[in-house]
Length: 208
Image (cartoon, rainbow, N blue to C red):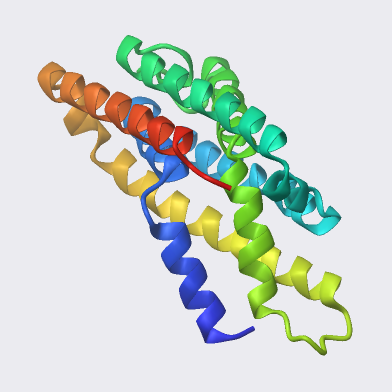
């Protein structure tokens, strides 16, 4: 494992994106347990993209304009839906005052995980990222390239979970100060909605 791979992965993972924005939004609306669920869901959402890269499906997305556009527009619509949910305080972004141990909190965590997985699955750029990113750190003469790719993918996923969990727990730590101030919450909802809409627009104009 090279330091260049670890450093590059940390920069990629820590950079603000859909997963980070969603984890922060969940942490502020639902608390620490939900933020861990969001981090876990975002990490699980990497698996299909990783498998697609290994099976060559990512190459199909890269070469097929129709396949890329279909997945891309599904992602755009979903991000706009997330923006609407943020404004309306519904779905996985609804403010939850339940305790982490309550059955309702458990159901909410499952909803958060599913939403986080969908966010990554519907992002065609992520699978192409795996197709272009990981092979750079696999030597040409590598005896077991598939095993090496699995190893690098595992490290990428572990770092994703760790970084997102830190983001989420930090946001959850200031949650009580935020949700007691309606004006601040209103501003945050609009900010998260604008963020999801902006990411949707960015994805809409993305090229293969």
